[in-house]
Length: 321
Image (cartoon, rainbow, N blue to C red; front, top):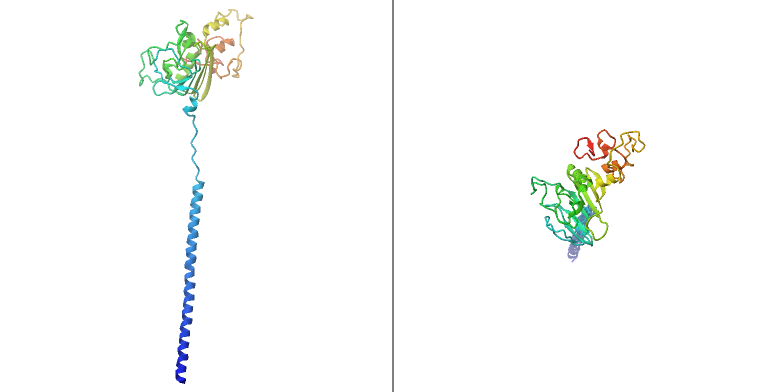
């Protein structure tokens, strides 16, 4: 009986020892797996950091802004855009319209007011005529004739282009005004066109045409603003015969033979280049008329202090010959 009891006690002890061993193994297993759980957490945090960093990078990328440009809708606001053939000889103009008066692919925009008067012409760029690749007549024009705007029937008025054929303009009524013939052929209008041709074109061109009343189609004055070789030019002149104006001012008669005569107007020489007393419109250039009005005799030679401020159209060293 005592032997059985000892055997039983030994069995219980063995079971107890085995149980303790399992408990220790379980604890060890749990301790060994703990770092794996921490590794998993760390990986998730790293992922979140990467996503956050990517978001920050996307937010910090600069946005590319497009430079705003004036749309044709803004330019044509208040006007109806219509098409008119460049060689249309009709002198009629519709009111409150805008018409492209540039030959070929040029964009020269002409605007009329509520009375059908041509009041404004604008062009971002003036592209001179290309007589080698464009259908130019032997006369140097695109068309054989110009629009018959009321007033051009006068023998003193030309069918004057706001933008000449040589500068890429067409010949319909939206580019033609009755212009005094001497002014158109030899005066400020001709000088302006020649300056642009010699410069190879112009930019930021604008013509403003003024009328004495709302009924006539014959302008009273013109103002041209344009940029050539980086210089902005403003030309303003009346629609009159410059020779007649000079004569009325006594600038076309013979000079007195006696240089000491008190009636002779002799402007003092200016070596400082101050043209403010001669340049009446303040555009930085001196016209022949302005020089004559100031009392200077023509021609102005290349060694004269005024010469650099004047246009020598034929480059012969003389202006106003």
